[in-house]
Length: 185
Image (cartoon, rainbow, N blue to C red):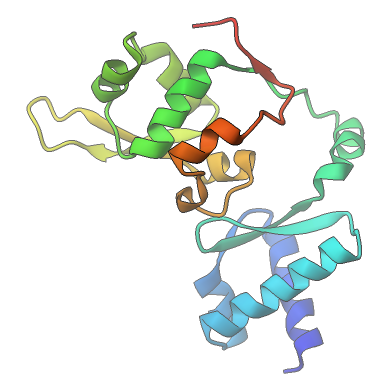
């Protein structure tokens, strides 16, 4: 199969899936090895960017998904009448960052770090599908463990949790998002 044919097939698979597709599934469908498949997908993804196309291919924890380009969001949301994203309060951002960096983590561990009850913040993050239950700690009471989801990766434009900035580097990063509010605990 020629590269153009592989790109066409991959494009069709990602388009019809509507969600992320594991690299293994794509490679198996094409009867190719994973490293070649990943290279073809990344080359196709690069073409979309360099040609300033309206779609992108994003990688999420060894899966790939087709989505609209960020610069097209305003137009796509107007067409589809997508409600504006809800604000992420300071409390939610703090809780989410603790979960992201310490995962898997219990509510008690989050509360120990933040110094306040984490029930509301964790529940809101679960509702938004940014975090989920990933198991139970082998300790008395078997408390729930929480970790981030693929939606978390999509929301922050990460391929995997390993792509989070190193904590020391965070001081030099300025917020780019305008939907962050700092007035709720």
